[in-house]
Amino acid sequence: MIILEEKRLEKIPCTYQDWMNCFNQMKEEPLSRIGYEQFSMGEFWGSEATLVSLENQMVDAINVVLNRIVKRFLKDFNECLMFNELSQMDSLFKKLKKDINRVMFFLDLNFLSDNFKKELYNSVSEQMLSFWNDTIDFLQKQANEYYNSDLEDVLFLIKRIKLFS
Image: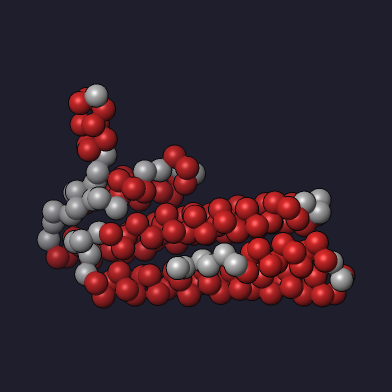
């Protein structure tokens, strides 16, 4: 038991190189295999100049992950529409919400300035809310155009999901 706990703690990033490894992992691996919870416990031991570079790398990694999340969502979303599997639609939106919230691990990092966290949060939330709302608007137009009551029912469930609470 102690060995497992020690291994878990070794994965918590604290140096610039540790963070670069985390960002590379974020860019390359599926969300399900990444320990975002451990990232949120990370620290940073370095100079102010290195921290600025780290912040830039973090923004880049988060953008890559968000793009991958959106692409996967759109693929699944289009399949649901194509095969008329509307019952899966609300779970897609719930998964999207969960994935986006996992990427917000940076909010828990004490070594980042509040200003940086606020700007990054605002940027991510604006982009994702815009995408979220555009997708819901598209579904609403489809429901209205084709008089689809099943889609209206699904939209009712989706609209109850709050992306950022």
